[in-house]
Length: 368
Image (cartoon, rainbow, N blue to C red; front, side, top):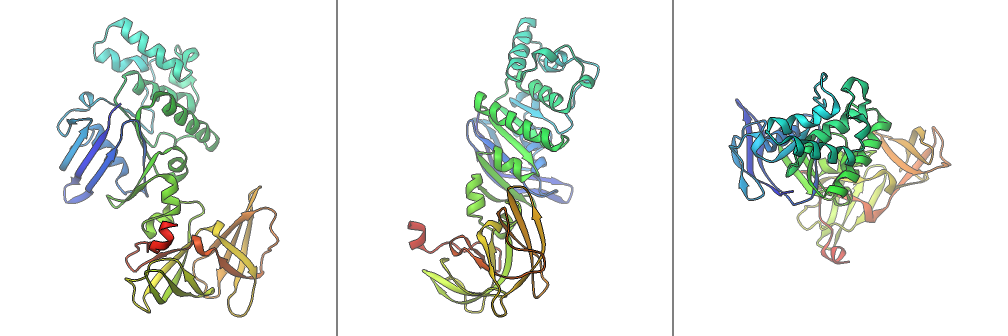
């Protein structure tokens, strides 16, 4: 295994700037997930690490080695693709051995590596089969085995589960997590599915328009998003956002006014915000409580979704703006068409400024 270091990494295609000054450190044995919306550059960044795309600027190191100009076969990486990319006329054994034979390894070494990898991935009974006789999950394991048999310093995954059905994705997520635990290998994984990111990663890298928006553990990104984009992207259902107006504030906290909810006293440091500044207030569905409607502060329940052990309640403000979501355990005492008041849990409310940056908690609250 090895570390990966990106310093001011850039990639352009003609006049289109795809990857923009990316700095990132991936430690030995870490499981790092690149996540972001379509077109954000996550797969391109992975291909730059693999050597499948040329670097336009910056430095890329694997361990202590500068690899900017090294071909893929000399970088010590193994890659698992979304499409599996298995040879249909070869058996499982032959697919897994193909790269080793190209490297002109001795037959005994090839056999030892393939058999050892097959045992780890529970493919021993499938070695004589061809890909058409395998299920989707089995093909994915073969693709992983082909990469692992080369004993790479780094394993790269490019949306490997997107072609699988929902139940099989859950199974394969567990298998990949267990594999990382057993091998301790450095793994970099690309996905657009935040559930995969949250359940697999030691560290998540959120990308937006070719730049890193935030890096952190799944818990950090969920509880302490640095920007409104991260707050809205991480979490399902997504975070609720409401416009807010700054009434007054200082380093110890602030008061804001939010349509449909009223005035709130919050623990964010607002010393850099002027009175009357337009902000965004964010609160996750599980941190939004419902109460009986009073006065003008009311929302209408427009849908109730029962998901077995929990309930999603969709609420429409009087202004008719974007729907808000409340999540709670089942059963639910609220029904379609009811008018309710919203009571956010103040310790879990987020504030974002006009540039979509999160306001930090007051120093006294951070220390606590």
